Length: 505
Ligand SMILES: NC(=O)c1ccc[n+]([C@@H]2O[C@H](COP(=O)([O-])OP(=O)(O)OC[C@H]3O[C@@H](n4cnc5c(N)ncnc54)[C@H](O)[C@@H]3O)[C@@H](O)[C@H]2O)c1
Ligand SMILES: O=C[C@H](O)CS(=O)(=O)O
Image 1 (spheres, protein in one colour):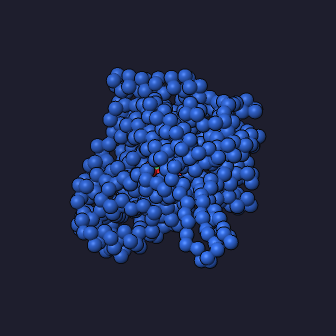
Image 2 (image 1 turned 60 degrees about the horizontal axis):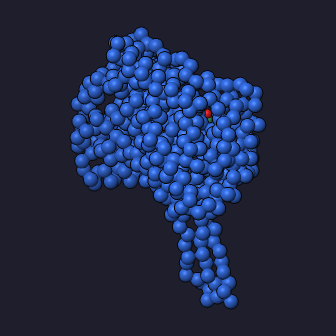
Image 3 (image 1 turned 120 degrees about the vertical axis):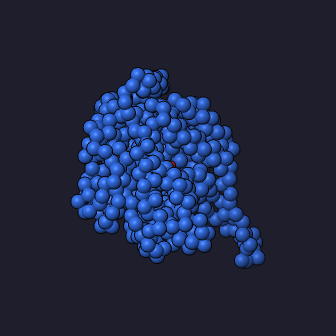
């Protein structure tokens, strides 16, 4: 399968691309984003080796970061461990002030940070800006939450006893983050951890390390003490082995694929680390006969194609009930055809490139498998492609035993499945090993509640294709992970309760 070329390289588009790239590259240059950040110092790899960072839209090198391995990861653990006593003993209010400064700096630089995200990850600029706004929201939330690590007293069961419950920070936290939200995933983990009094070592995805380094630059300016916030760059395994194998690291917070999550879970077992795992999804998007079809199409477009289909909550299986199937399919194809694909810096672009060649190869494999299994490709032009661009693809008649029923497509490819009854679609929706998010379009409140009660996911969008909220407990069940991010739930992940039992004589 070949891939769409970016929309026409008109003068106006080329100017927008040139200016956007220039803005992002100026940030990389002026903030000197070519060193990792350990113990309050910007450091190179011990070997002086570097890893290139690639623009997924153009395929060219846009930067380079230190290729660090075990020794540098150990130095980061030393720093975080040494800094923990001082940071955890600060008043919650003192930590809150620094977090608020970090939030304000993220906001002050939001447009430059968005340009950096578009350059290293490829998403359209307006979506990148929304990502930065999302990161600001998490930093704001946890700057406030820092002061709410509330304990508890409880009625004594003996006259000469009193019980007091306190909350204590877990300790040193390792945070391993994905490439699809290169800034928000860092802030969504580090803000609650830092608010709780933990110290953090971040290992960002090797495809998108620059946003994490930019976050560190602003953390330094915000006043986090040396060793409290560290970023180690490089290929994952040697760094992750050091982080998971060291007993001084008391928690791993990981966002990424279920496959890697399982591996890291096993690596953490010997040192009994606390885990927060935000793993893979495979969202069912359910459209009932009584749904508002136009609203369902609009919601499916957002849920399917946001971030070029590269989010953990993207609709991965679209289920449409018999009575509205033909109407939905024709409207959805028309809307898909209208999507503007190309370089994320061009205003109005809705779909950018996939992150890398492996992602393109994966979607090629899944589409070819579905076609051979009997799926019909009802829209998806065979265009000469370049880079990592994949035009929106709509498939119908997809068999339930096609690989894409169980695997995340992580691309702008929409498999549509027909169903007849509530019971059938609930069984189909739940027939997978993951359970992160799901979507349900209906106007019958009884039907909505009946189905939502039985969907095996951590998040349900009701007549809505997006579900992000910094105060809500985001996370999944089954093989989508454990733990939650967002709100007080995300804060408690980084706290341990301790109860004091007083004999008062
Ligand atoms: N649940 C969520 O909140 C959420 C959010 C974003 C992405 N995801 C999931 O992440 C996946 C896509 O992201 P991805 O491709 O970056 O995932 P990935 O698992 O390949 O990589 C995620 C992170 O893990 C690191 N990593 C990779 N292999 C490793 C190993 N063997 N040991 C240690 N670390 C390793 C990577 O360098 C990266 O930093 C999808 O499955 C998506 O659903 C989930
Ligand atoms: O990709 C995973 C993100 O968590 C999706 S969202 O930004 O939280 O909706």
